[in-house]
Image (cartoon, rainbow, N blue to C red; front, side, top):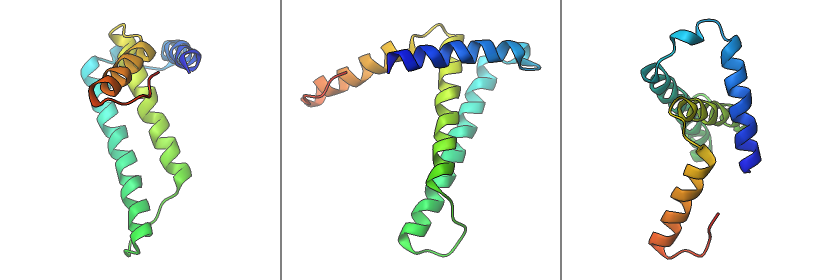
Length: 108
């Protein structure tokens, strides 16, 4: 998995060099972008739950949720890149710290 994080980081950084207006992007912009993407994922989850519970209203798909969650991960990596954070190391450290705290036996 660490290799996939490195691949994403490299691709994100290269693509941002090609993205029109990327030089204007600030951390505040990135934070708002992340909030928007998380909101879109939550909206899909709401619609999936609506269907699961048999409540009338618009429906959605797991495939759409996968797309929105991918957007979240991409945005998180871009923010981590801005601040020079090794995202895989941060995820591993946080996961393992929580496992230790709760007495779990699963570690990365």
